[in-house]
Length: 512
Image (cartoon, rainbow, N blue to C red; front, side, top):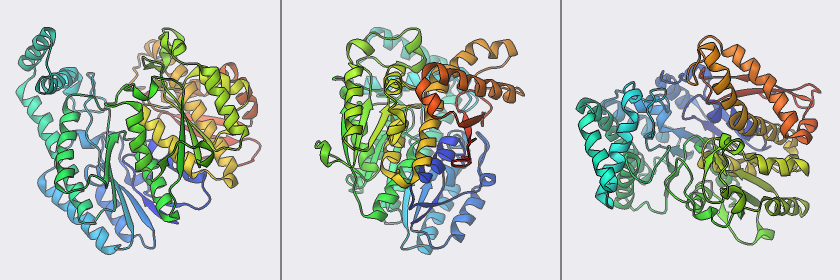
């Protein structure tokens, strides 16, 4: 089965991870956009070339399309653009033309609700967000909360202060762009209602309970109700996993299958907790991700195609690097991790396909979990392990590989596990912060700009990966010693890293 794929941007999580995901399946053939057509961070992609590429494609069973790439030229360009109604009209014409040219091809699309970071930084936002980002977020958060509930005296004073402090032209610019993007989400819903799009998901990027994202969400919900699309479209936290989700949904639809998923939680309170950077409990996001990917949750583990072991906090959630210096005591008091890993081992020994979503911390894996898995040499025995960035990013990609991975592609699965142990735990939870705190200041570098020292920093990361792998996960290190990893910082910053993996025993070649 063949599918064309247009990512939301050029980062590894939307390109390389898709390639690695597809490599674990022996039936999927993915056509992807040439990297030269894609943009670079704030520089928008050549959208006309991408449309020309799509119009020329023939004999595919499905297309996975991103509105962010096809209209704005990428995810970050969608936050800083100066597009007009004419640009939106042309986008709509192109979508209709694409369906007219491919009437029997299933169209899977995503259109993201624009994020509102809770901090001041212009790295991925308009320039003024460096000075007023926190104020823009907090002002909208408190205004929305005031309209829906009530504010404390302190919150009222803070809202008044930010209303006075924020320049009107900045608020106008930011809100006009959000209004444009909301109109695009509504257009995508209209295209779904008319059958131009067959499947649509609307992820919320870095969402919160109140504020701009929540306000935009209500607009989308009203449009969904107006068009009677409640059972056809899903809106949920996420963004960078959406390519994996829709490629897997395409596979399930083409295979005429609805995989079943049984879920095991690591804590009692976990399902009802709201993870960092999201607006709803873990369990509510889980329901929507399972539906979006074309699967079904069941309680009967023996009948399940996949058993998802969902590692979540005990009560309070932290960033991954906090586990080594300031770990919240509820991670131990409100979880019993030996019992959790006992259940993982029992499931593996019983022949279940086991996938692990490691979401106990934000932005990196849980050492207690991985240490226990490594002591029992269980990491190579699962079909999927992920623990990166947000809960939704981890959950979506974990489910995708858990569904797609086939036994005939064991080497690809092995390399995928290796990649995520290195990236999600060793780099994100340990190495990234250590280099940021102790190396970058000495070189006059910052987290957001490695300047012309990228190669030096990447070589340091390569060395540290070997050292930390051997130290923290010795059994997995021994089992994967034949792999050699070379890192790259694609956006010349510390947040994300890309890995090239080669097998020195030539068991499987490189991961390109």
